Amino acid sequence: MVCSIVGLGLMGGSFGLAMRDYFEKIIGIDHNKNHCNEALKLGLVDEIGNFESIEESDIVILAIPVKGIIKALNEISKLNFKDDLTIIDFGSTKESIIKSCPKHIRKNLVASHPMAGTEYSGPNAAIADLYNNKIMVVCNIEESGKVQRNRAVDIFNKLKMHIKYMDANEHDRHAAFISHMPHIVSFSIANAVLKQEDKEHIVTLAAGGFRDMSRLAKSNPHMWRDIFSENKKNLLDSIEAFKSELKKAKKMIENEEWDKLEEWMKTGNNLHKIM
Amino acid sequence: MVCSIVGLGLMGGSFGLAMRDYFEKIIGIDHNKNHCNEALKLGLVDEIGNFESIEESDIVILAIPVKGIIKALNEISKLNFKDDLTIIDFGSTKESIIKSCPKHIRKNLVASHPMAGTEYSGPNAAIADLYNNKIMVVCNIEESGKVQRNRAVDIFNKLKMHIKYMDANEHDRHAAFISHMPHIVSFSIANAVLKQEDKEHIVTLAAGGFRDMSRLAKSNPHMWRDIFSENKKNLLDSIEAFKSELKKAKKMIENEEWDKLEEWMKTGNNLHKIM
Image (cartoon, rainbow over all chains, first blue to last red; front, top):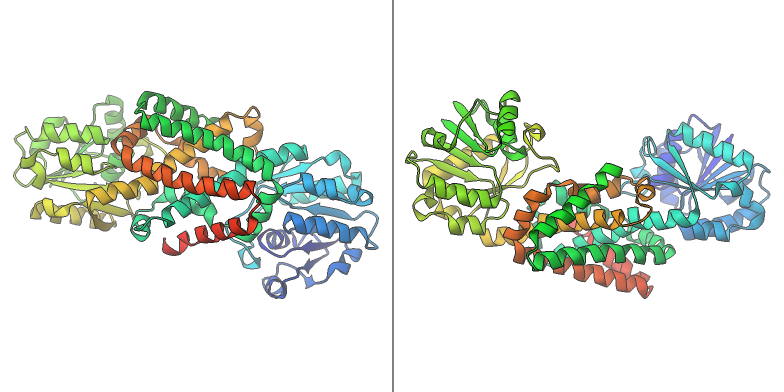
């Protein structure tokens, strides 16, 4: 089978690297010429193509931001693609993608979100084991065709991923809590420290804990603005839930209610029992 | 030289493990009998002693919480200790310790704070390379005796640590930003997720980013309540600085000011250039 990857950054590039042996041919597609050259040089894909290359493909991976995926689905719907074409998108919010997918290609689409990533981006950031042992969320699977489901499952198994089926709605809410809000929090920590006059002095003390908490603030701002805008309502809800806990903690500290604060922290400890 | 370690948890135990060859003898001291037995069994110390063992010691490491350190300094001041006794405390806030140290033993004390740790505690958590390549903050060093300074520096060098000299005041402010506030933030994330009805479902999506952001919420609540209470003012200031950034981000999201939000994130990216 022939596979096209649209978007040769961290996600698309890592997919290519991991799946080179699985497909007869992998075609890379990206607006960014530098990314194309790098991907070819790094051996992430077999050749570089253009959007029309999708007509000869059996599988298309859309490893681009959500707005790009919505546009790409529209363009694909106008191509003379193979009947069994399987489109797998890696968009980080799912409801808007599924809602805007042209009806006659809905069965071709398997709406997925790999819970994998690093703080780096671009083809150079690609690593072969990015997907290994990670969760792949697949949304509203009952709307995908049978051939497409089976192909997608085979691919995710080959990547050694654990598949979780979920409603798109539910996925977007969960993603806000597990990923989008923590990004806003990490950027807030980074900016709070940077506002301090003695910031250089402060960060000389940074140990593991602070490195963990500020790592997400390395993420790509251009990519993340789109994710935030696509999931605005859920993101604001999850920020509100976080703020309410922070407010509670601040009040206990102000009032020196140390027993109560200790209980609140003990409750927080329980998170790791369910993770 | 003979070294006593008061407190056989993660910090004291790891110190013993790393320094067994350096001292003639290491005596472990801990109220908790189980910790004493474990430390002996794990080879973290040579023998178990009691507070009077400090009289035969050249070095004492106080690897206990701040309130315990303040009490211990008072008790040590009444012992018949050696003239050159070097007391090194590992307390995570420094001003209250230095202020309350009995005058006649102030020269014996080297007030230090290793920027090292894990989210685990107890002798079982001890690891030989905990201090390796980490920062050791030493505060108000001009108030320590010459012999004591030199001995402490030798020990920190043996541990392969990088020494930073700092005013106690400044240290406590920095520690709030780099460690204490991020702990409150991590516990707030954990509690916010735990409040959600579908929490088990949410955490199935947890990938690296969320694991990083929630790791500090595994920390020991009993230990941290004391750290927070010792550094209340600085902690509240740093929470306020964080909250003001979060509020700004929330407002930009509500108002869909995506360009502005992207700029704010780009600024946050700069943190890692100075770290």
